[in-house]
Amino acid sequence: MSAVNLNSPEVQIRETRLNSITGFCGRASDLVRCSHARRLHNRSRSFSQGMMCSSSAAFCQLSMIVDAAVINHAPVGCAGDFPNFHFTFRAGQAERNMPSVIGRYFSSNIDENDTIFGATQKLADTIRLAYERVHPGAIFITTSCASGIIGDDVDGVAQVASDELGIPVIACICEGFRSGIWTSGFDAAYHSVVRGLVKPPRRKTNKVNIINFFGAHVFDEMLQRLGTEPTYIVPFSNVEDLKYVSEARATIQICPTLGSYFSSALEKVYGVPEIKSPPAYGVAGTDRWLRELGGILGQEDEVERIIEEGHERIGPKLEEYRRKFKGKTAYLTAGAAHGHAIIALVRELGFSVNGAAIFHHDPLYDNENPASDALAHDIATYGDINNYSVCNKQSFEIINLLNKYRPDILVARHTGMAHWGAKLGIPSFLVDDEQFGFGYDGILNYAERIEDTIDNREYLENFAKHAVSPYTKWWMDQDPFTFLGGDTNVDSY
Image 1 (cartoon, helix red, strand yellow):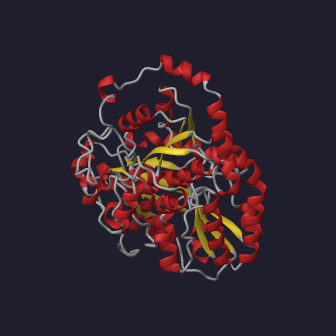
Image 2 (cartoon, helix red, strand yellow):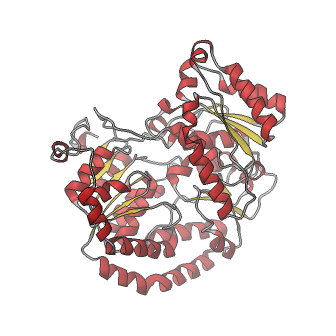
């Protein structure tokens, strides 16, 4: 595993840096065992239906910095995601009572001539145009497959523009073909922030960094009770905020899949301690996470009071839900860290997990600390999972697995996944807010939504009668992993 290198414009992809994989089927305990033994090898697919783009993952983070502009150095077709990012940006501002600002997104519009003669001049012109139009505090440039193939010196153009304009102009090297794991785009975005914006601390403050997606401020009350002030990054922060995240007392993250690189970089380069326990999902996970945070902040006694109050507050209701859900089964599909969190939550509620399809697997995170292994924590706390697969959003595998296992509920983290359960008449719950399940109250949040989803089956049953599936009976009768190559013997991993 390589150390953080801020002299390089690019960060190593997860396949190289973390030995991450996208292909596995078997028992979760075998995956953890092989990961810890450093004997894990990827199983590739002879057929792949679709996956996300690491360039899009990078853009989705940088585009939410309120006073920055982002230029996608790409053909204009790659700007097709801009409306989605803009909607999220505007909705998040309204939720936080922030002044309404439009997204500052630009495309350099690489065309056929540019792929022959180069597009660095077009990029330089786009940088100047963006600066003249919106006067941002910083400009980020995300690369694309097209700019990577033609070999444009994006970092060189950015450095010249930064000297000319007097603001940070920062290259984010994230072209889609660089990595088969789209979360490498998060790492690329955060590498560009640490490398191009963050400065050494002037002094230490009483703030705690929270690496977050787009959810509401669920941590505010708890951190204030611990005598600290939350700083949410990167979405809905500004350039000045980001310059001094090095001054924080600690860094926590809603999802290590998102924040692994950023939190580790802040610790390794600037000495900001990272909370290494898996995020606070489930009773046992929340207890452990809070105790680590309390130890770093010197608030052990107050944390024990928070834990005691949390157990007392949710205990009776949690037992009631466990009795109701006893004997029921759940299947889940999500990104790596959030998928492991969902496993903890549904098992805490009394469900048996009869399968999981997780989008990728990181053997270890950037801190290289086994304490961060959320899947190992799930197995140690709640037991093994026999039907555990790793697939990068391959819908054809997921619908086959759902048809085979027929769970009482499907819990899906990402849009586009939950409807596969609905087509089969399986109650399906889409998790649209990553903070929804956090902490003790998050367990009850899940319980309420799952109860409502299971108890209202009539619509889904009618929907399934009329739903048209693109998958034939031939495929539904196949082994779900027909196209997953490699030796099926886990001892070969």
